[in-house]
Structures are given as C-alpha cells and as structure tokens.
Image 1: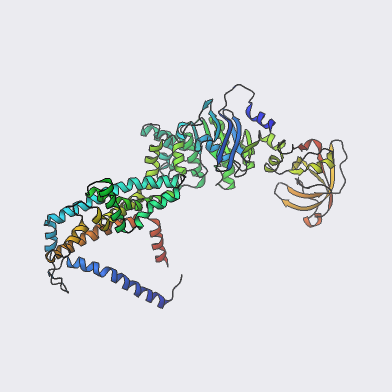
Image 2: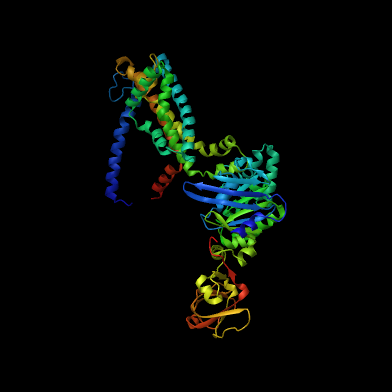
Length: 273
Length: 357
C-alpha cells in the first residue's frame, strides 16, 4: 500500500508518541536505579551504583532471584516436554476430540490470572491437600507456559512434512531414533523460541504466583510487591525492576529472532520499499 | 475379472513371489481405497501400478511399505507375513514422490542414514554412501545439502538412499512426476537399467501410461481400488481387458455394443487402436477378405510430429481417431468435411467384455 507524504508523517508522529508513552516510564525506572537522589527528583542529581550494591547485598533480593530463576527454568523444562508431546500428537495423528483438546491446551494463556490462580489454589489446598511451595508455582506456571512451546512446535510441524518421519522409519529407524535424528533437529529452533518465551512468561509472572506460592517463599515480582510501599526500599525496588525487565525482554527478543522467517521477511520488505 | 485374477496370481512356477497380496483392503472413513486386491509380484520384476489419481495404487504401495495398516487382507514379503509389521521392520524401501530427503543432513548423511540406524560405524557407512552417490553420478556433491540440488539430483539421492541398504523390494511412488519431460525420459532409461543390473524387484507407481509401458515387465492397471488387468506392456496395450483399460492406456476407438452390432453383428463393445485404422482419401473402400471399411467425414486434425491424428465421424458409427504417418494429400482446410473411407483389419479389433461380467 502506498501512503501519501502527509499520511506517513502523521502515522510516524502517532507511532512515536505511543512508543514514547510506553517506554518513558520504563526508562525512568532504569535511570532511577542509578539516581543518586533518594526521592527520585528530576532531573537526576547524580549517578550512583549504591542501589545496585545494596540490592546485590540484600539476602531477600538474592533469594528472590534464585527462586524466580529456579521456577522459570523448571516450568520451562516441563513446558518443553509436555508442549512438544501435545503438539506432535495433535499435529501428526487424527483422533476423536482432537480439535477440542487443541482448544483446551491453548485456553490457559487466555484465562485471567486471577481465575487460574484461585482455581489452582483451591485444587492444591482443598482437593489435593498439597502444601503450597515453589513446586506448586512451577506447576501453575507450566499450565500456561506450555502454550508458547506448543504454539511454536505445532507451527513448525505444520511446515515440515510427515514424509520425513516416514522416510526415516522406511530406512529402518525406530520411533525414538526417528525423533532424535529427524524430528528433533527440525524442531530445534522452534523449541528454543518457545522455551525462551515460556521462561520470560514465568519469570515475571505475579498474579498466579500470588495464589500458589508457599508461605515464606518469594519470587522477584512478589518481592517487589512486598517492598513497593516501604520508602527506604524504593531505590532497591527500582534495581530489581530493571533486572526483571532485562531478564524478561532478552529472551523475547531472542525468540523473535529465532522464530525466524516471517519477521525477517517483513523487515526486508520495509527496507525494499 | 476372472481372467485377470488368474494372470495376476499364478506365475506358472512354484517360486515364492517377492510380494504377495491377498484380499488386501483399506477403508478410509467410508471410502474403500483398496478393494480386495490379489497380486503376486515376481522376484526381480519391474512391476508398475498404473491408474488415475484416487485409484488406490499409492495406497497399495503405502500398505506394502507399512505406512498404513490394511483394514483386512494380508501382505507377504518373500513368503513371510509382514501385514502387521512396522515400516522399519520390513525389508522394503521407498523412493518418495517429494523425495523426503532430510534437509538438515548433507547428501552423505542422507544416504548413510539407513546404515547409521543399523549401527554401521561412521567411516564405513560414509564410504558406502559415497560409493552409492558415485553410482548415481553425484560423487562431487557429497557435502551439499538437499536444498542445493536440482529436482533430478534430489531424485537420484533419494534412489541412492533407498538402495544403499539393499532392500528386497524397492517401492517408487511417482518418483519422476516432478521432473520435466526430457529429464523424465532420461531417468526412465536409467531406472530401468539400474533395476536390471541390480536384479531388485521394483514396484513403480505412476499415472503416466507411457512411462508404465516403456519401463515395466508387467503392469497392473488400477481403477476404483481394484486391479482391472495385469499383463505385460504388450498385452495391456494390444489386448485391453475392458473399456476402462482400453481408454486409460493409450488412445482407443471404442464402438459401443449397438455400433458393434451394426458392423459385426455381435452386441459387445469393441476397441481399435488409432494406428490400426487406415484412411482412404479418395473414398474408395478397400475390398479384401478380413478387412472392414466404413465411410465417414473428416472433422479435424492434430499434428503430433511423427504423424497426424485424423478425426473421422463414421456414418452411423462413432467418431474415431486414425493415426496417419504419411503426409496428408492437401491442407487442413481442403480436407475437413471431405468424405473418406476408414478401413481396418478384423484382427485389430479387441472385444471388450461389458463391465462387471
């Protein structure tokens, strides 16, 4: 579609304003984490690494980082295994109820976190009688992290022909050999992209976590929530927020680049225009 | 049908066939893709399964390979029942229509794949794979990926990959369908020579009747999930068993029962090949014993290089096509609508039993 010069200008300005509106507050958080002024007056009075040092020395923050990483890694591993198995069964085989199962698998990512949280909390505490812990958080996160892996893998499977697996079997490979030598190499980048998204999703999740975490445990987002309104912790909260931003954005950026062609193609088209 | 069954199943010797299908049936939902097929394929034979798309030939191939399990019936490979075996437990290999080369592997690794999963050590299997690629003239390209090859080259890799594990039977699923005409004809010759030198049984699926006629020792003509006729190329072409085969394999001039009745006094359909018809332009009928003539008028021409197809509407009969190898006595405009006489030897007539009898 061709746009007139004025339309381009207007659209450019509007886009710029929207992006500015989204990213200024984030930049502010990053800047304030280095702001020498305790009350975050503007403009910043000076540059300091004091808050970063404090955050690093705080055992509460360190525990929260470790917990968040642990939860995100374990939830990602579970998502990778289950998401791949689901995608393979739903893409490669026809069976009764396939469409419904497909919908049920994707649904958790659309469900409001509050609902998932309450439902799982209820499930764990009253029905199963399991004490809440980081493990319950892992299971809760896996329910929706699985979806990103599932979506990536099923999209890749649609593009790779089942004929490759048939060829492998034809040449004498059993089911697991075929998966290892033929299917998995086709899925590798899709798994990486899906896994990174799952990791990012879990790492900064707070609502479901609130309902499923054990007493005395904290993840990074929970730590922020608990310390947000303590005035003397405010600078450290900024630091933690920056960590959270970086650890969540980098995997998503990587995943974007990995899930590949479509992004690259549209970028090339803009350039050619 | 009884004749074709006999031709398909009794080989005249006690030799165990390479492949024996008995009452093989495959139902998908409510379509019967393969309907009680009986077939014996001999050792070292180049057997083509010929038929239009949807006739069940590819399904039969996939059943033999093990990608589909039959609804009923049995499949024997060299006398051993393999009906319920998985594809990787059967000593048959497939060359796929889209080649199905592994895109993430080099040519050597593609060809060595079957040896790798059989546990052959790395150096040995790569050596064997290189030899196999040499045999299909791709020795220079061992390190390339499939995406860097042309269609014809991929086809050869697929062939080398399937043959390197020395299968008892090689299944080929329209392997030449994606190639252009010249390359296809060249590959037809190469495949046939390869098959003869290796002595391996080839089962070749195609919808191209010319391909089947030029390459095969025997042909099975498929229609609606059943085999209509089994025979050598010569038998199939010269003596088609029914109207379907007569129409599908080559061009046929069919007289229906009524038209045949008026010519020969026998109420059964018959067929005559275009090259067996002679056109007398002056309108003078041939008067000899064993020759039948009918008058008609020319309706159109198609020049096909080595000959011209002349379409003639016979008086009181069907429109027929005659293949005239010699030069025509005038321009198309002069000849159209000209009254002519079409003659043929009576022994060129093939009587076709009405379907289902």
